[in-house]
Image 1 (tube, helix red, strand yellow):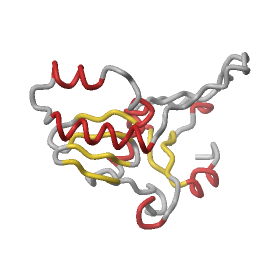
Image 2 (cartoon, one colour; image 1 turned 90 degrees about the horizontal axis):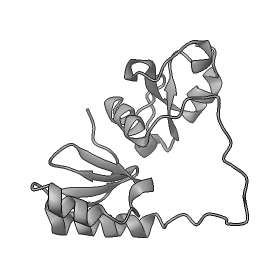
Image 3 (cartoon, one colour; image 1 turned 30 degrees about the horizontal axis):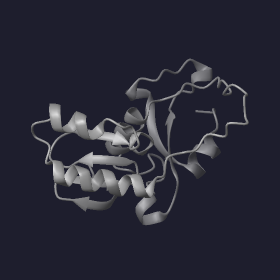
Length: 151
């Protein structure tokens, strides 16, 4: 099992391509959550194993790397509903890590080959597939777009 592609390490914490990860225990939150206001209070009050200086350095780095998204207030349209299942960032990260951040079909990786990786269903939802981890795999964009829902 490989580690996530680390962008910057701060002692026991790292900023990865996917978010902020503790390197000494299984604790991860995705980059879309770095601007949630309660991380410091949460970590300092409930996680006795957390090295707070390392965590705060990693969190501050992540917040600089991924600025808070500003929503367009002029757009009043509701978000589009997808017929596809929506997987949580935690599940996506788990599948990427399980598959060693490599395409399950061709073996290419984001780090060494520069490909974009997707987490997709082996048996498509449109053909009765589920969101169970056994039905999910990592594919590069070329393999994923080439297979469509044919497998």
